[in-house]
Length: 330
Image 1 (cartoon, one colour):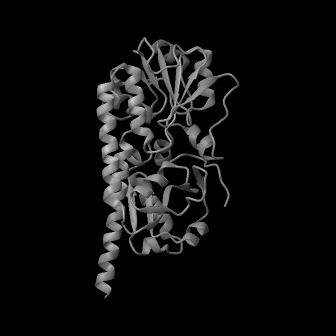
Image 2 (image 1 turned 135 degrees about the horizontal axis):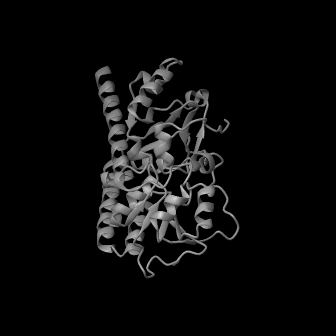
Image 3 (image 1 turned 30 degrees about the horizontal axis):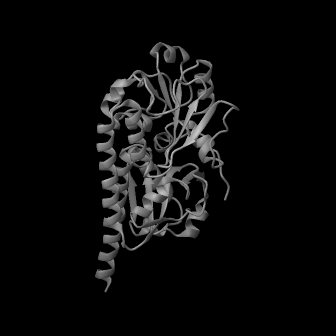
């Protein structure tokens, strides 16, 4: 099985990455692009998310004064995390794909996933730029360094990192009460999901995020953890690369019980048609297909918990249909 570089990202992959760089750097090859020497120092918090403070930034400690008042985010999920932490009113810029919550659509755009506009960056007068440690392209970080802007890099790899990141931002902004309440809600919902689906019959899942080439996620991606919460196993969990292209034969060889499609309505129609033109996959023959909203399941923000619930509900419907079919056949 070879890892191939996709030619053009779909909607599902755009929301999955937040920036094109994660697809081209972190998922293809399994690691983020290397940093320039001396560009940042990294602090690993015991609660999970790693934070890097770029050279020349105002303060390395999340609790240091003064509090950031003019913030720019460089990924859609970071925008969502800022709002969840109670800091949405401080946003003065973000990239073009930041569209949630609704208020985020009114935040000025300073570029897109491929390019930042230096003039807009400077005009926004940010006192903090929040970048994605795994996904912000090194070229964008270089622009920020040249402009001598303070940069905070954040990473989220696990479900627990989402509420942890909300709390961390709350401490940074001085909005601890709002952030703590949201983080508590997210953790409680995750605990509820784990308790509800514990002991469910295991199902084996192929998780599709693109079709040309056929693209999936491996064991190091949070999707594998989400499936585990739902009582399901990723058939490509043994692959430690976060995301990669596979050939159809490798999917047939693994014979998944369920096919999960994380794409837009248009994409899912196309993916179904592509599968229909091939030899029939057992999951398709039995109707064991779950469609997941890519905005919920592919962004490492607060809605990832709702996405996990959606995924679990879809997989449970497959189990129920299978049980009903078995009962009818007896």
